[in-house]
Image (cartoon, rainbow over all chains, first blue to last red):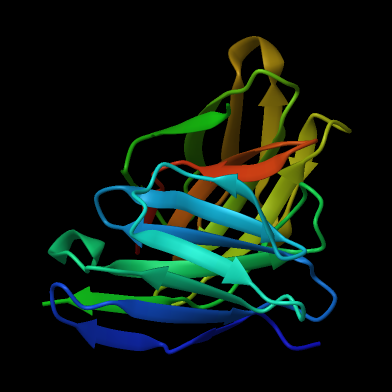
Length: 112
Length: 113
């Protein structure tokens, strides 16, 4: 069974641009969560989607948005990028319960 | 809402010494608790989880953690550190009904030869 796949692996953008990150969950998993990881803040919860609906949301500004498709694949979009958005963005999936998450390797975003 | 606090952003031990990584949680409902490990340039992997069964939980690679409700703690231990244990460790808490897993800030473990 393939794991959680995130693309692209690395991204370099400039301030003011927007970016879209993609996550393909493990086959059969209906829940996808997104996290931002930075050295100073650790892992911060962005949002969780389940069956195409946002089920939970963290404390991030509206520039951060996401969606989930009918095949459970998810995208995360960040508009009007700021330097502070530079981070590793991790996607995780599970079958929809509250037990363990399966993580992808992340997308490393650098904003210049 | 749930939250976790990991005490100590960096822990350094000698090879063969006891590993103790501290985690305290806050939750309005009986929580599920987890420890994850992250190796460089990789995502997180589950080490162990507590889901209201046995309070002493054994995980992979010789790690274990004990759920102590009275202390709201879920500390991670390993009797003898190995060089390959060097990584970042994250404690996490989840509401059994809602899900919504929240992570601590992480503890970087260094193992000295």
